[in-house]
Amino acid sequence: MRRTRLTGLTVLALAALLAGGAVVSGYGSRALSAVRAASWDLDIERAMDVVGVAPGMVVGEAGAGDGYFSLPMARRVGPEGAVYANDISRRVLSQLESNARREQLDNVHVVEGDVDDPRFPRRDLELVVIVHAFHDFTQPVAWLRNVKKYLGPGATVAIIDRDPSQVGDSHFWPRERIVRYAEEAGFEPTKVVDSISRHLIVVIKPRAERASAR
Ligand SMILES: C[S@@+](CC[C@H](N)C(=O)[O-])C[C@H]1O[C@@H](n2cnc3c(N)ncnc32)[C@H](O)[C@@H]1O
Image (cartoon, rainbow, N blue to C red; front, side, top):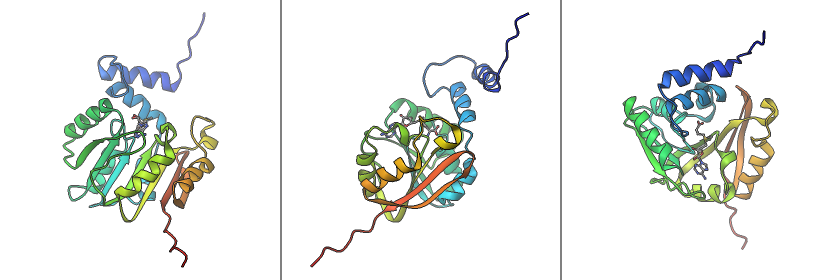
C-alpha cells in the first residue's frame, strides 16, 4: 500500500486553511498568514529586546505585511507609543488595519510608501525595523538613503531576516550584502546578532557627517 507522508508544515497548512474557513487568495488571508508566521519561526519577543523596542516609543516598520511584527511592537510600546506600519501594498495594509482593529490596537497607523521611500508621516522615529522584507526591496540603497529623513536623533534601523547561512536558503541576504548596502547609503552597523531563531539582526545608524575640511 502506498503511504503518504505528511510533513509538519503540510499538517499545519491544512489546519490553518481549515481554521481560516476558506481559501482566500492573496498574501493577507488569515489562513495563509498563519502558515507563513509558523514558517518564519522568529522569536519576536527576543528580537524586540535586541533592537530595543520599549514602552512609549514611536517606531516604524517597513514592509510590515499584515502586521506579523507591527502588532507585537504595538502591544509593547503601548498606548503612550505608536507604530507606523509601512508597506508598498495597499492590500496588505488593509489587512493589517483590520488585524489591529480586531486586537483594539489604536496606536497602529498604516503608511503606504514607494519602493524607494517609506513616506513616514513623522521625522522623529526612534527606530525603524524591516522584518523578513529587506531582501524583497528592489532599491535598498535608495530606500535607506531616504529613510534617514524620518529618523530622530540617535535613531537606528534594524534589519531582521532569516539568516541564509543557518537556514540554507540563498533567497535571504547574507550579512555582508546588508552591511554593504547600509554603508553605501551612509549608515554604519552598530550590532549584528545571529543567535535568535536562525535569524540575522543587523542594526545600523546613520554615519556622522564629517566636518568639511577647511
Ligand atoms: C515577505 S513579506 C514580510 C511581511 C512581514 N514583515 C512579515 O514578517 O510577515 C515582505 C513585504 O515587504 C513588502 N515590500 C516589498 N518591497 C517593499 C518596499 N520597497 N517598501 C516597503 N515594503 C516593501 C511587500 O509588499 C511585503 O508585504
